[in-house]
Amino acid sequence: MGMQMSEELSDLTYWLALEIAKHDPIVDFNVIYEGSLELDFLYQLLTSKAQRYWWDTFGVELNPVTINNAFFRAIAMLHQRNVEFSQSRNVAETEWVKELLHL
Image (cartoon, rainbow, N blue to C red; front, side, top):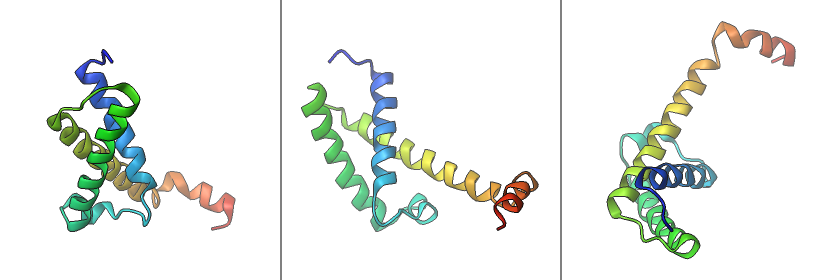
């Protein structure tokens, strides 16, 4: 119950990133990062779910600013991870793995 604001933000960001990653169908981060109806839907769904989860689990009422920051940090983090993954797929460092797997 005595969570610090920075701990709460990082924990909430991680929790939201996991929830977004579990979303089915898979989120297109290139589209969602630019803003879309899917982003609005995810925002409404996951921020209310986070509020409820944090209240039920920790007895903490989340500040709307904290939830907003955590949600968009999670989106940015997942988008960046997706960009880095896409860029690394065709670099020379991964060629030996493709050869090993016969791809």
